[in-house]
Length: 239
Image (tube, rainbow, N blue to C red; front, top):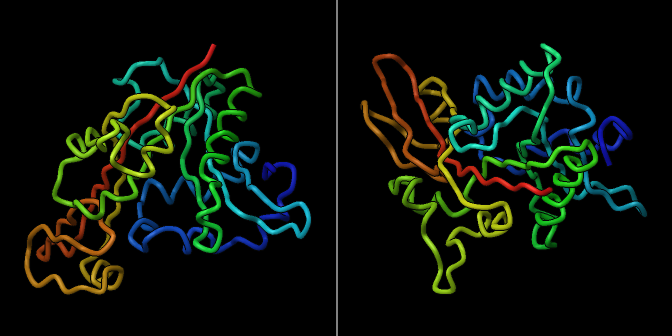
């Protein structure tokens, strides 16, 4: 169900993102700037899966329409740039050619019910309903936090003995095609990072931290922690 059709369904899931994402993922300056406007600017592209019996929301999906020329080069560096491009296209009245998935949010209490594939299918259906033939997705690999020092370019190519992608969340997206690197950015003061991670950062350097897909760079002289989270672009097209 789309936000533009049943906005009241969102009343019960105002804290859904807090349940799904690590704290540090909620503090990207660019991401937060545009995310706060999604429901006003793109209400028809935000949706939930819900139980029609008790009206319980099971999961939420976020997408935006944007222009993409079909090449890897035009995918951009990641979700931050993708969001900015979608809003700029809407502002100037441009014509979208694709839909980008932004997030598939399934709270822990509903995980394990095979809802991720349903969310992806719903995203593709949104694109088809608008006559768009491409779905792209900057995917956050679900097991990358176990290997934070491995470059995403190498991790994205890892496979299991049967040839399928090593990462579980990337496997769900295998129908979307081949991977290429992407990223999103989170930053904050050293004190904020120490709060988010429950760690101390005594000196300047790069630190591995819980749930991090890469290291965070701590600069105590500038009182700044910067984290560039590696994602993987996956794309799908149809006639």
